[in-house]
Image (cartoon, rainbow, N blue to C red; front, side, top):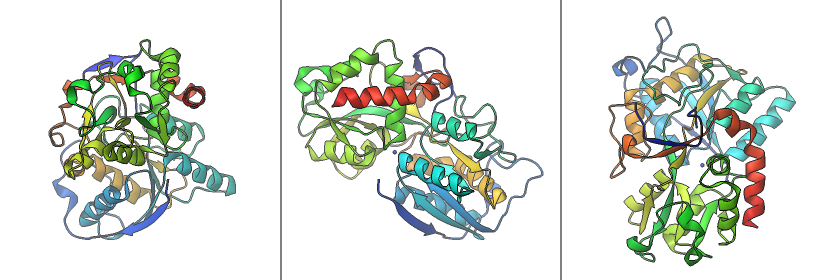
Length: 353
């Protein structure tokens, strides 16, 4: 899959706090209709049973739909979902690791640098029976420990009842204009994995960097807990301009909210919301089948229905979203994104205060 990208340096792999527990199952149809190379490898079982615990930052309604669709093909797998912001998930995983073992089978959240940390901590199992040949370049871990499941760019959004389209910001640089002082809202990178990723990308962008972030802070943006509250604040008009993941804008617009997204002219940071199996998993067979479902044609069509951009070709794009080829995406070297994350988040928090 080709993407139009505006690079920071080297194109590389890339990747949204209330806690909730949800167990879901709705049985029915067979997995055999999944297409060729996004499926289970030859020799692997195409059925499983037992329980499966998933840690995720996916919105509750969306993950419930995914689990129900998975159970149509694998009705004997009981999936329990624990969802939270990426920061809270990481803290839970760290606490469980310290106590002896991670209690979940799967982690589905955030961005590639987060998963690089999990991999470095020896928390993940190598994917043995998941075929990723149809998945776009850059969404697959080169060592085979995790794989991206959707493309989630971060965009500029604005309230169309408050700001005329002709006056709306078109670029990240526009957000530093004095006319937007006290009108901007953004998610907290201490809570949101996507926000932490964005901060690192911006800090390492030649057009943006520390000077841009400092200038943005001078416009006194409101820092919301995560992307969900950010999108609501924009739609409600309290802060009519914001920085948020694109699918939430489409979700709210579809519900009638006066909100519209703008893909910044410099390019959009994006995450791929990877998924991986924990090394401590008690049901790796079912865990890999869950990943296989997410990457299948049916799983990616569901992602599109949920307003996400897909990681495979041939399943369309959501609503009036542009085609992937028409979106300029910001990339950075994966090692930089991983190693410079803490410094970038710290600088962001200092600049916004």
